[in-house]
Image (cartoon, rainbow, N blue to C red; front, side, top):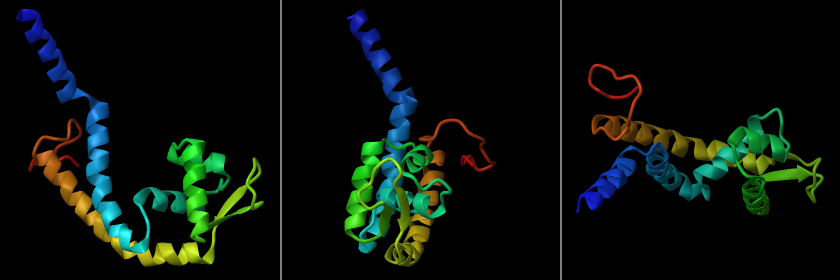
Length: 151
């Protein structure tokens, strides 16, 4: 019985303190309202991140986008191919390859401009979630202001 209690205590400690589990949970909590806000535009937040990285990045080659977003090359390739099918990004040369350069099409720029108000709305909602989670003690660490919300 004592060994069972120790094991259970160890499991509960990992469940309660695991930073990776908390980050993954927070990722899902934050991503959900963002994806919901972007859905009418046919976008997910992960796609917006890629399109923005392509639009803003000095290094628009797939390897540079992967580095900037900490993505696996296969994940980027799959998402870029899907978005190319919708006409948002394009590449030169069009068949890909090591020297491929990514850029947004005019349709991609227009899409991001149309989706921006939805993104801003989602940002405000996510900020509310962040403050609430801090007050509930779901966020660990960080500086706390007078009301107890993590900044």
